[in-house]
Amino acid sequence: MHLIWLLAWRFRSDKRQNGFISFISASSTFGIGLGCFVLIVLLSVMNGFERELKDKLLSVIPHAEFKSVYANGIENWADELSQLKKHPEVTFVEPYVKATGMVQKGNKMKAVEITGLDPSFAQNGILPTLVSEQAWSEFLADENGVLLGVGVMEKLKLKAGDKVQILLPQLSNDLSLSAPKVIRLNVLAGINLGGELSNHVGFINMSLAAKAQNIGFGAQGLRLRYEDPFRAPALTREIGFKMKSEVYMSNWTVSDGNLYQDIQLVRVVVYIALILVIAVACFNIVSTLVMAVNEKQSEIAMLKSMGAKNGLIIFVFMLQGSFNGFIGTILGVVCGAFMAINLAKVANFVENLLGVKFLSGDIYFIDFLPSELNWNEVYLTATIAISLSVLATIYPAITAAKINPAKVLGH
Image 1 (cartoon, rainbow, N blue to C red):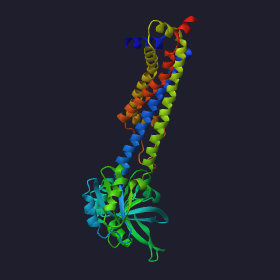
Image 2 (cartoon, rainbow, N blue to C red):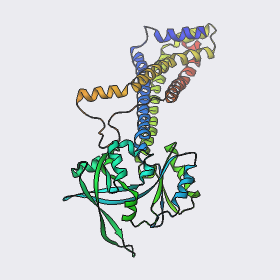
Image 3 (spheres, one colour):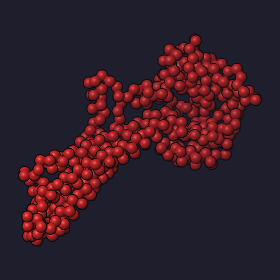
Image 4 (cartoon, helix red, strand yellow):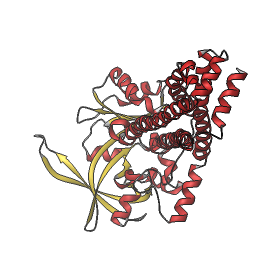
């Protein structure tokens, strides 16, 4: 092995080596390093978006909803709720009434999804943390109070203390639309849920919403949160099929899962694309070694005439070509990991320098570039890059071992 290392290093560092071979060799090293660097950084960004999605967006929206198929709501919703609380994966559950209506202030109107909540249950949820203590106390005390998304309040130029009216569509017995029901409410505070959600949500007292929607049993459905929101589809089906009431099942991946699905799709596309970039860089190793073998035919012939076996020649050139992969991988992984750890700071510096904003808070649920380094992905990237580098050396190394010393030395 000492001889193999010595020969491989001397062949690689030979100053008489053709300049074009040196250029192709450096290009392969740079390409492998760049591919590893970009792959690690982009996967870290995808991980960051997934983490922020879980910690921010999924902390304010329900993970699952079970809505009664009947207009009167769920008759025994209190019993169903107590059963759901016993499920080990369920962390929070509450009854709700939901309706889509129009919020009107003067001659301005805005479509809003109104959710009626029972304050005694909502007290233990996330909603109290999104408003001031005073606003929440008013919501508990004022049955006609409403909490609106900050986007709705900006659109209608509302502020706390204003009075608005909400027009809710009504269905007659023959399922045709009748004149909308008008509810007059007091605006208590604005809620910032992040991104587009803040532009079309509102919360009122559940008893008021039930009266307005003629829901006799008081609750239209139940909504809940899971310990692991990414298991919502499977858990929702499991729980829904066990419920005694007839309900429609829905989870956040159906109603608000576009972003999560986009993240997973981009992750797969990025991984495939950049692995191909690394593979293309590894093809440069093949070109480099093929040219190096042609250039070193006399040296190979002399080694074989002195007793060097084919295995030694193969390992020498495999090791020589693998140097490019090792060096490129190490540089790419180290730089990629460093950039991924400090990406938020770097992005913030660039934003301040250029005076631009990469992510707008009123469109996305975050206004910064997130990053979370996953060391398992780093190890996988390094393993793939080194494996492709080693595979790229096999054909040229075998070609070197097939050189006939008699023909070469004869010339």
